[in-house]
Image 1: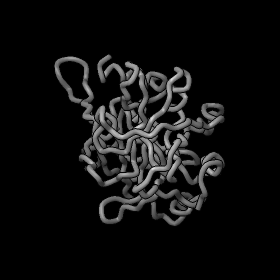
Image 2: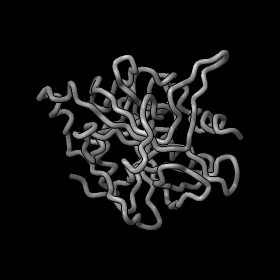
Image 3: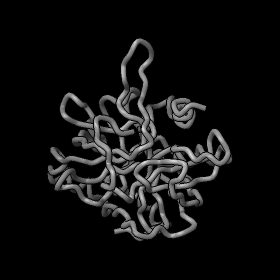
Image 4: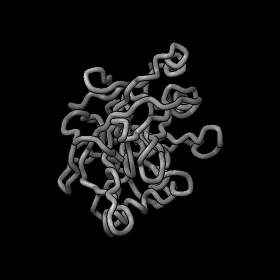
Length: 262
C-alpha cells in the first residue's frame, strides 16, 4: 500500500467532518521538540510500523494523542507503538504501549472528547515530558484580552501543504517531524482555533498531525506547555487548525486518570 493510500485509509473516518491535521508552511524540527513523537501501527504490512498520528510525552510513561487515532487502531485490532526520533525509519527505536481512548469520545455533540493516551510499557529516559495548562487558563487569557496576538507552535509528522498540478492535489510526506507557527483565531468551551493562512505568514497542520501538540508561544517565547491537541481543519489544510483544549474540565477529568495535573 502506498504512503498516500495509507494516510487516506487512516484518516477516512474524519472525512465526514473535516480532515485531521500535518504541518504546512513550516520547517523541519530536528531536535527542537524531542518529546513529540509519532504514533505507529502495522497498518498495511505485518512488521512494518507506519505513521498514523502524532502525540506528545506528558510523563515518562504517558503519550498524549487524539481519540480518533486510537479508536481507529482499536477498531481494526492493531497495536500501538511510539517513536520519538525526528525521522521515522525501519530502524527507529520504538516503544510499545496500551491505548486508552476516552470513553466519552463522540458521545456528545457539545464536546466530542477527542483525547486519548498510550501508556507505554517502559519509561522513556532522556526526554523531558511536556507540561499541561492549569484549569481554565485560556478562559482567563481571553478575559484579560491576552489571547489576541498570541502565537502557537504546532509540531507533527504529517503531510505538508498540498501541491497543485494537472490532477488532484497531492500532499507530500517525508517521515520527518516538522513545526510551524500559527496565530490565535478563536476560542470556545471546547476548541482553540488557530489561523494557518499562509498569506498572513502563518503555518499550520494537515493530515497525520492529529493528536500532536500546539505549544503556547513561538520562537524565543515558546513554552513547554501544550495548549491543545490538533484534531481537524479545512479539507485542503489552508485556513484553520482546530484543536482540542487541555484546560477544560472534560479534558482534565480524562487526563487526571494518568498524570498529575497543574
